[in-house]
Image (tube, rainbow, N blue to C red; front, side):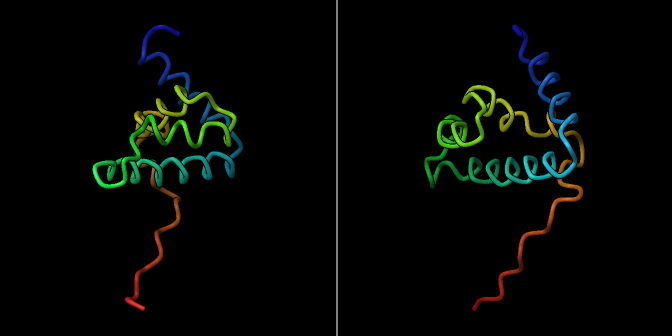
Length: 93
């Protein structure tokens, strides 16, 4: 696929075809990794670095996984956090 928008649309279609539990797990994992990437100025984990580390484990090419992270909202749709578990509360202990 030549066009980036076409690739993102195709990723969204593929993600929507996953069984609900698998799609939720992938969405939550990607959501967490997007937060990691947002702190790349501190942790040096850019989209590229995260994709290189996680793509072999997920059996997804690094470029495809990086695109999935970079275009998280488009791949997982609006309100992509809906149904995701809330992060645990920090109680200072």
